[in-house]
Image 1: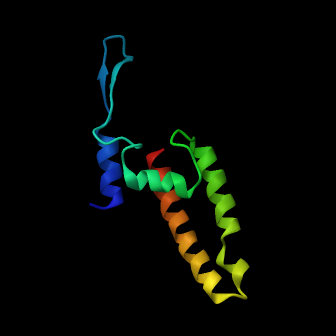
Image 2: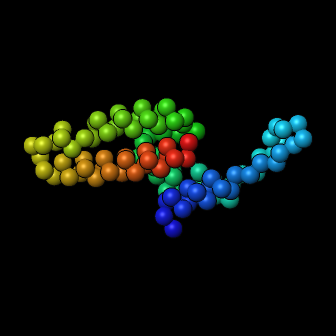
Image 3: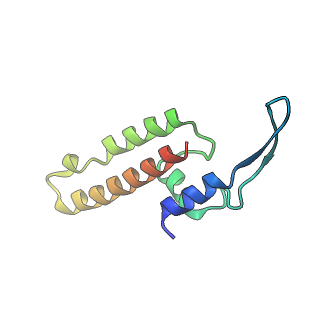
Length: 102
């Protein structure tokens, strides 16, 4: 199961009961919450964020970390450049997934 399938399953599992006063009455938590999903937990830890971080904080941390680990900063050392490329790919994957959730 890909991460997008998991994310869509989590998003679809949020259900609300609609009351006559047109306000949400009760909240039914999803089957697999964010804290229980190891992939989403990894994404939050990659971006050095708590689980309840708002989208603004996700964006700020993502940009800061991408700047810090950008491969062009390590031009002189090819091994560090490869590691930085892998880290940047992980950060991109985490950010793209978390911004879809929020």
